[in-house]
Amino acid sequence: MQEGTPNQVNLEPWFWFPSPATIWDGPSFLGRVGIQKDDLPWKIRASVIHSIRAHHGAVRSMAVHQDESTIFTAGIGQGYKGTVLKWELSRTDCLSGYYGHEEVVNDICILSSSGRVASCDGTIHIWNSQTGKQISVFAESETESGHPTSHPTSVPKVSSDQANVLNLNTLSNGMLSSAFDSSLYTCMHLLDSAETLVVGTGNGSLRFIDVARGQKLHIWRGESNEPSFHSLISAICSSGSNKTQAGGISNSPSLIATGLSSGHCKLFDAKSGNVISSWRAHDGYVTKLASPEEHLLISSSLDRTLRVWDLRMNLPSQPIIFRGHSDGISSFSIWGQDVISISRNRIGLLSLSKSTNEMDGQHHIIPQKLYVSDNGMRSLSALSSIRLKS
Image 1: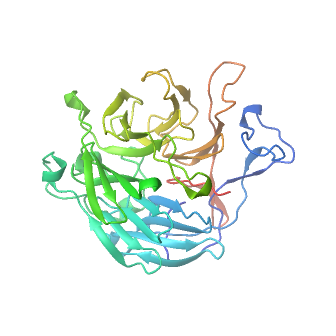
Image 2 (image 1 turned 135 degrees about the vertical axis):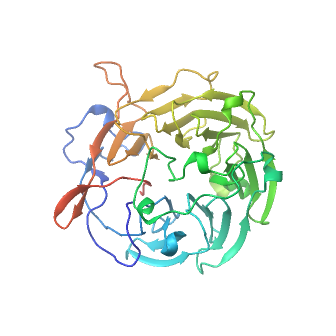
């Protein structure tokens, strides 16, 4: 989504979406795979459904409810405080919001079917998505985190100029790493099987929070012997079957992966908390991790690459590296075997099953520019978040 204000709804073009192509004239490796045989391949075209000016400034995060008709967006509200808004897509209406944050909200997590939402601004706020009322707030003290910090204050207030700029030279959530308190929370990942939030911190540790009981659990330090390795956790995902099986039963994941602002990635054993592997995955800040299959890990970075890692190999194994974006990749989303990535004002599509161009043996992302209609004129718009709907 793009930047805007919640007080006006303006049906102008703002995004591209993949639609079935009756005549496919693109490269063969961009075809959709792993779905119904009678489905046609994707072709990205400039088609517009709705345009919503959601926030004052860039949209920092977005989450889609499992019903796929409701989304939550995080951005800047009045007084430049963090705000989370709830939207009904069929009507493009803002249904409600949560206004309890003091700082920029950098992540949102929908807590299964409980009707609760978690949002992060350095602290974790749990709130009722129907009423917008706060349920609980979690914070990490310096004593608990085990890493004293030289920064006595939290993230600095956002100015009006900063609210309207998405700067990919800073962190993906708009916060400068040099100003980030090591005891603050940075990002979240929900383990559905245990109703547990896994939360990253500014010192590279993982905090576990029992959502149902509303209490903090253990913390995994994940320290490194390298003195220069100290960096914040920027992305989290789980691998090994954090998915609902037949009968509504969820199996616990076997691995938890973290991406760091240093470009490193780590794999934790989900049962013991031991670090299984730690390696230099990218040359820049890791913006997102995902595990579409038990043995695969996908990572994106501000180093302008998207990489696919085989977890069955001894890491760091040689990954499949996708190049093509001219700026840092801020996020991506997966549909079956296809990955759509965003980089500043471009959107790119790649296939995990047919990723190699037979001509030169290279792995390519083919980006397309995104234009926004502004008073009849086409203008470029920086993309900050992407989610796919079926």
